[in-house]
Image (cartoon, rainbow, N blue to C red; front, side, top):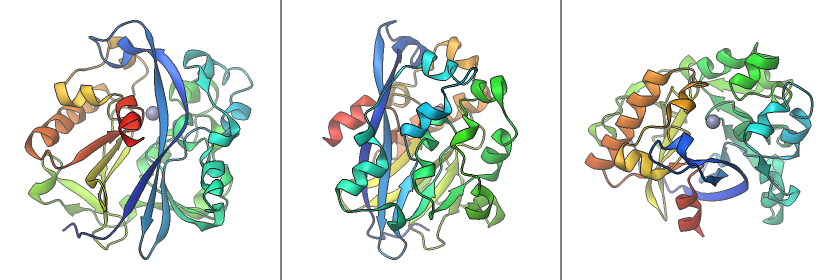
Length: 280
Ligand SMILES: [Zn+2]
């Protein structure tokens, strides 16, 4: 059961990439649009600071310099200034890497794990299936899955908590159509669900924020809010590099149903411009 723990969520933009809109929503235009890479900072009264993903950082460029990794920033050109890294934005607020107790990794794409190396003490939380899917990928097979191996810290396995190694639980009707979740800290404050599709083992999290109230961070289960609101699927081109198209579509329908049946949940896709503008 979810408890109203007093969490506070702040969003940060860590740069953006550009891509034709039509790839992400099939009725969109071919015009290139900006996709901000957002990071969530969650303040938990007992667990301290928790990051939801880490966005872009300088490491992303170092890791994608050599061929074939250099294909990645060519397909989705990235606009980033060093002061936009989550480490630097937090430091400017007096929050330092050692203050971040946990990093929740939604999935292992370069624009979500770009800053992991900047937080050498934090404990990672993710789904094991997400890690297992990418761990041995290198070269073209890594790139095809949006993964840049150099972004993964060498001591990753010593610092990670795989949620499936604990018990999952049946979610209440409040979350329907999502039925199975993981109570991350076993205190009812943060619930993780599996949003496989865009990536295997992609994780979304539900939380109660003291300002925005009920929030669902859905990572890249869709790229724009309009997609879940109006149930708009991506262009078939986007499916070419998607590891599980059927689950992607099923999860987009679930997001749509959640929005229709439980409008109290504010659904936040990581790359939606609308979210970033509204948060300003
Ligand atoms: Zn992604």
